[in-house]
Image (cartoon, rainbow, N blue to C red; front, side, top):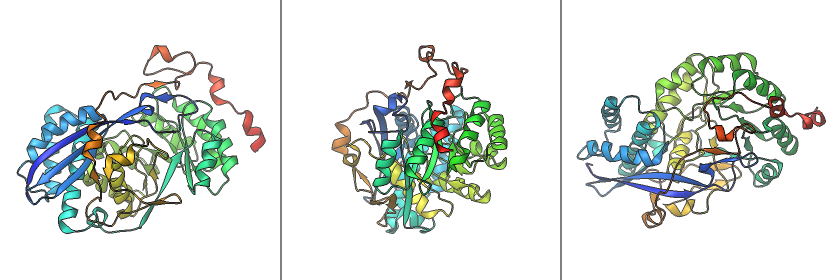
Length: 402
C-alpha cells in the first residue's frame, strides 16, 4: 500500500455554544476556530483521514512540506515514517505544536489507513479494546448550564475562566451534588502566581475535585512543585505540550496525576500511545485535551481511550457549533455521558469535502477578551500581577456551603 497523494483541507468553524469561559469572557476561538484535516491516498484506493491543530493555518503549510517526504512510501510503516518526519523537522529547531501538529495529522491518517487495510478498528490496532465506551465531561460556566448537563445524563463537569472561580465552583458543586465529578481549569496563564494558585487550590479542596487543571503556567516547573507540595488535589496538565520530553520532568517529579495531551497537537497516535505507557509506569491517568479540536481528532481520542489501560475521561464541547457534524461522514454514538468506541475499519470517519470548502479559513488567533484582570486588558502584557487582588477570591457564597 503505497502513498500516492496527500491533500490538506483547512476550514473556518464556528464557535461552540458554551464553554467554561462563558461567564467571565471569551477568547477569539469562542467565536470561530480553524480546523485542519488531511487525506492520504494510496495505490490500493484506501484513503486515510487525520487532523492537526495547535495553529491550524500554519500546520497546513507544514503538512504541505512534510507530505512530500511520504509520497511513494509504504503507508504501513507508521513508526518509521513518524521518525522520518521528526528527523526532517530537526533543522527547523524545536517546532512545538506546529511541527508536531503536522506530524499528528499525517500520523493519524496512517493509523486510519493501516486499520482500514487490515479490516479492523484503530483501537484494535492500538492493542485491542479495554473498554467499549469512554466517559466524557462538558464545560459549565454557571449553575444553570451545569444542571442542564446533569439532566442530559452527563456525569462530569469542568468549571473554567478567571473570575470568581472559587465561588462558582462551590455554587456548582452545591447544585449538582457529590455524585457528579467536578474539575476546575485555571488555564495556566503566566500571571497566575504559584502563591495564588495554592490559595485557590486550598479553597477548592472541600469540593474533592477529579482534578485541578493548569494551576500555573506549563513551563513553570518550580511553581508546579510548590502547588504539588501545598494543595491536596489531583493535578492535571499538558494540553500545550508537543513532545514526550516536555512531559518527562512532570512525570519524573510526580507533579501530575493526569496528563492531557491534545490528539491533534501531540505527534499523532504513535506518540500518544508512548505517552500513555510512560504515564502508566508512573500511575498517572490520561485525559486528552479536546477543547478546540474538530471531529476527526475526537474520533482518534476515543479510539485511544478505548485501547489504553489508564484512560480517565475525554473533554467534549457539548453543545458545539451546529456545523460540526456536517464536516464529516460518520458520527460518534453518545449515551448518558459516554461515547461508544467505533468498531468499524479504521477511525470510521471521513470528510465532507464540499461542506469544508464552503467554509474557508479567515482567522485563527486566541486573544482573550474579558478574561484579563480588571482594568488591564488594554495593556496586553504576558505577565502581570493581580490588581484589586482580594476581589479575585470572592467567598460570599462559601459560608452558606460550610
